[in-house]
Length: 127
Length: 127
DNA sequence: TTAATAACGATAATGATTATCATTATCGGA
DNA sequence: TCCGATAATGATAATCATTATCGTTATTAA
Image (cartoon, rainbow over all chains, first blue to last red; front, top):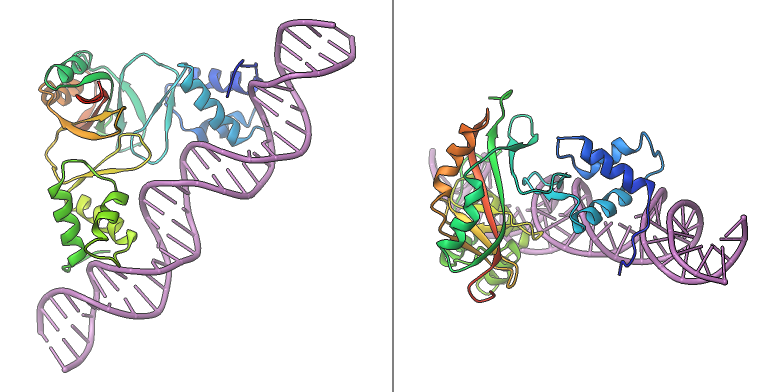
């Protein structure tokens, strides 16, 4: 039961690192990277704070189906693309996506709160 | 390295079961269900054959982010809905989805081969 | 009927993530 | 500034879905 958050250098460094990249890294990648500045940092700390950042709305997790969760400090709804060639995750522009939630709700007897749109294929370099 | 498939009652039963339901079950659920007819069936056999069915295009796996893979014998592209209330997965009708792959490809320098559209919210009963 | 081998059941291994726990760091108030 | 409460840490064990291994059984074609 978490009440009042306290500051921690590790969490700040994690968030700053996540904000600085566009690569949608995994916990493992962030861990390896953070070790350069904090050699004693624990993988558990990375997972703990990624979860905390997700819960507080400062980051989102992206499941592209490759077995490990990817993270993103851009929390506004947007679509992702997974390149089967280089296995990288990137943001893409999909204008139709803005209308698809309401389209889904209109044609089914459901309440749509959010959606997860992932596209697969080959990126500019791999195609 | 699998060359020539041989028949097996377990695989047939698994596929028949998967075809008979619209619930997008998990491996565990299928295993429990199949045990009634095949008390000695192994969970490994279920996973093995689900993988085989996926590889041969007779089924697809759906990752809704709840920690376990769901399976579906309907292999034609279609959208899924995950109800946060009853934790069930269902097919939904989303007309716009038919155009979204080309929309994604048109607005980005990528080749889109497939996509995975999952919607979250509350179903007719839970809302 | 038989030989080759795919599939099986049982179970150990894997790998990402989470939980536990003793220690350390943070922070508001005395 | 020091103190007490407790959040956060690092180390590591536990969890849990899935995959790999392996000896045995079932299927198939000759």
